[in-house]
Structure formats: structure tokens, C-alpha cells
Length: 206
Image: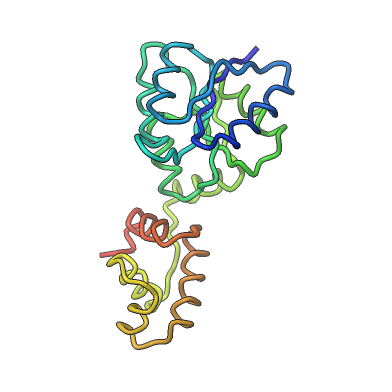
């Protein structure tokens, strides 16, 4: 029997996961937490085998900091990240904080069950897209952006919106949007903040 603690700030998501995990006879949910602070306290109290951890937890500490505190406990459980976020920055921070595995919420239930049991034994489990990013990072590969994309990325880092970027670079807003789409694809992100974060990590910005 693998015992787990579930941490996610969305009540509906926790309810769905509880129902799903309840269908697996070899998994027992000892408790659920809606914040990082609560997860740390319950992990210290309940001593689960695995903490299923989301990264974005609303107010308070995020999943990465919660993971860092949990893995520093006297009797630390293994932490398996379960999230929708798969940027290089998120993956690097989570693994650096001590996470045993990193799974995306889009995975099939069977994959989640297998990952939980693997994490309980200290084995690393990564979703396929995450594993690809980790391997690319280890090989030192960097995305190749055009000069114009780098210009736009620099304006993003300054906090400018599409209209201001268009004015600064003397191009149309439609052109800015097109370049942003290509930048997001190359960096593997879907938000402006994510693009800036990965660009800084990859040293694409001055």
C-alpha cells in the first residue's frame, strides 16, 4: 500500500483526484492540502510515502518552496509534482527543490498510478515532454531565435504590451502577435512571463 498526501489549491481538482485515486486499491490518501504551508505541516504529521504536489498554489508559498521544505523534513516523503506547467524554469526549480518526479495533469490515470508507486520507491518518473526538456537541457541545446524575435523578447522583458512593442519596433501589432506565437513555440511556453523566464534561464536576454 502506497500512502499519499494530495496538495492542490483547487477544490474541484482535489475532489477529482481523490475519486480517481480511490479507485486504485494499492493507494491510500492520508490527507489533502490546499496550500503549500498546509502541505508541509501535514507531511510532517502524517508521514505519507508520497506527496502529490501542484506548483501553483495561489497565496502563500508555491509548490517548489513547499517541496523544498518537505524534502528537508526529518522523515521526508518523496514529492511527485503533478501540474499543468512544463516550462524549463518550472522543471528545473522543482527538481532542484528535491522532487522525485514531474508529471503533467494530461497523463492517463494508469500513468499517474505507476508514477506514484515509482516515486514511493524513490524512482524518478517524468512525463515524456518533461523528459525531452530535461535531456535537451542536459545536452546544452538552446532555442534559436531570429534577431527580430530577440528584439521582441527584449521588449517583453521590459514589460511592454503588444501595442507598445509595435510602436517601439515600427511594426504592426499583428506582426508582433505572429512573432510572439513563434517565440512561444520555440521556448515551449504559453505565457509572456514564461517566455521571459525561460529566455533568462537560457541566457537569451542581455
